[in-house]
Structures are given as structure tokens and as C-alpha cells.
Image (tube, rainbow, N blue to C red; front, side, top):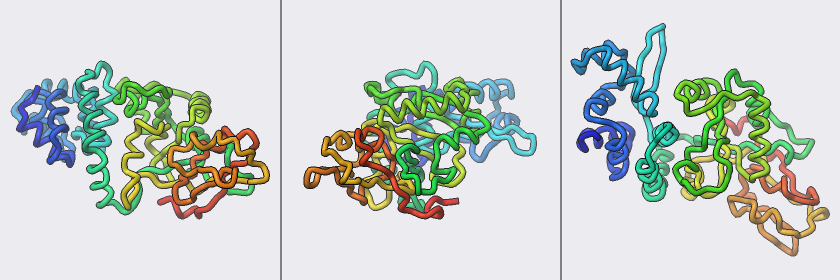
Length: 330
């Protein structure tokens, strides 16, 4: 348990200097020596540099870096053949990395749960005020897209996993923190470097593209929404989000949204719609309602996930392309 003054400095370092809860999370995770070294691990530094700055032996720094790495508080960088270490940079990164640490205490998870309820919406909106656009993006369920629409590689979850060099799957950090979600837990997938990181830490297991496609199928059946990095090269994660635990949805009420819609939107063929209302409860975003006994889509609310379409018994719901290819940042 570290000195609270050091923990407040660490909270400041991840952009949460005003938070009453983030220092408590650091306090539960590190001791004084670890906190002091973490404060020095930015910019990235070698073991030798950290030993020189702290006066600790190189062996002690090496052991500390390994321990902090496996606790999700230190990350590795290798440039020019030189191994360097740097501290956790942001709240979203720290949220995901620490909550998945094997053996993490319920005390820490409950602190995260309280933080997500009380502080995250305001903090996340503050982040968005400094960014040009959404950080994440919905991608659609492939089967839901009308045949004439153009599906690009970065729209296609199956193509993303098939093109990945390395894949892993972890428990969903949001559902781990919640502790009471009934949706599947081991469905958060990582791509390439993020996959290598989780495999090395022991927080994720390596999977094949075939296994990844099966996970996507299971998520589709469970009504989970695929969410990826908002760029044309997906190099980190494929989240499969529920409607009550996910940190992504907490920052969708302000003028700037954390998650961009897909390039598609749902539409209803009223000639096929039976008015069964099966799709209504399926939508996270309240984009569907009944009008004149038929399902109707609010285009301002629809994020184009396609989760509604896969339960339509008459195939009345489909996705169509409504945004051009340059909608997704390069």
C-alpha cells in the first residue's frame, strides 16, 4: 500500500488528478517504491536509467518491472533493440489492464465499479473535448447487410480476424468489474500487438481465426455489439459490448460521442414486417419503435450494429450503406 501523496501524483499522471477514487485504486495496487519508480517511467526508460534515477539495484528494478507489467501498470517498448518500460498512460488503459490481472481483489474491482458510475462519464467527456472525433466505432453484423451495399475490410469483423497475425481473447473487463452481468465473459478479442501483450501477461489466450469467428457468432446470438478502434486499420481490439456494463456507452449523451456509428443504418421493409416487436428490446440505443403497427428506425439514434436484424423472423430489417468509405479515419 503506497503513500496517498504518491498515489495522487500517479492519478495526476493518468489525467485524473481531481479524482477521489483513482488514488485509492493506486493505493491498493502498489507500494511506495513501486509508486516512485512508476512516476519516473515516463518517458520510457531502461532498467539502467531507472536504477540510476532511484538508486535501486538493477536486479530490483528488473523484478519490479516484471511484477508491475503483470499487474497492468507498466508496459514494454522495444525501439532500436533497447528494451524500455513506461507507466500506464490513461484511465481506459488502466481500467482494462488492471481489472484483468489474475487474482485481482474484489476491493479493487469495486473501486473501479464505483469510479465508472460516479466519475467516468464526466472524465470521458472531458477527453472527448480534446479529440477530433470518436475513439471507437461500431461495426455491423455481416449477415444483416443488404447485398448491394459495399462491405470494406474495416467494416467486417470476420475479415479483421482473418487478416490478423496474432489473435487473443480475454474476459471483458467491463463485465469483470460489474460482477453480475449475465452475458458471456470471455469474448473481448485483441489483434496483433494487443494480442501479444495479453498472451504474455497471461490475461488472454491465443486463438485461431476459426475460434475468433465462432466467438463472433456467439456474440451475435447474444445481442452483443461489435466495437473496434475508429480507424481503417484495426490494430487493437474487437470489443463485444452489452448494454449495461460497457464503458463505451457512458459517453454517448454529450455533443461529442465516444463511439462512432458504422457506415450502415437499419431500415424496415414494411411489406415484410409482421409487427411482432421482437427487434424493439434488442436495440441498445432506443432507435426502434412501433409506428402504425410496424417497426420504425430513428436514424439519429441508430448506430448500424445490425443486432436487431438477426432476430427478425421475416427478414424485414436490413442494414444499408449510408456513409462513404472516407467516414472512417485512415
